Image 1 (cartoon, protein in one colour):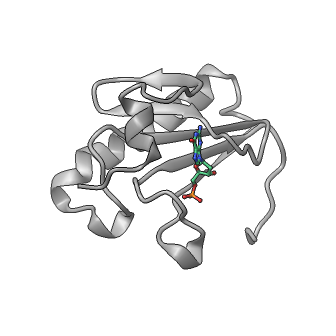
Image 2 (cartoon, helix red, strand yellow):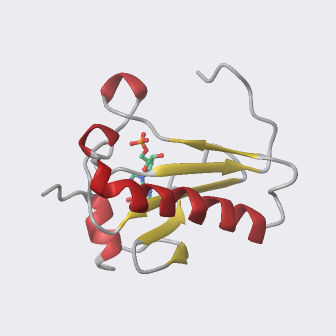
Length: 114
Ligand code: DGP
């Protein structure tokens, strides 16, 4: 099991700006936003990194993506565009080892990312 700060957010033991919730997924504003909209979508069932995801998690991974898309549509940002990012392990910049999907929107994105 991977206990991180995100587990505490799921259990409401520390505060977060929760903007989305369903049976499997929680979405909350990133504490260090990199865009006008920066929301993290996490599975309630913790997976440390994308490397530990298995075929049994396929539906859950799909739910994370669909939650991000639904939220972008809800904000009216879907047509303009948005970026979805999953950092996996240290070299990619992952700092919290509870799989999460970053939704970034509200400004022009650059490529390649830094
Ligand atoms: P990553 O670098 O991909 O592991 O992203 C982790 C993100 O989590 C990072 O952008 C900052 C955010 N974060 C870390 N601790 C907290 C917290 O306690 N609350 C919130 N809302 N976000 C956090």
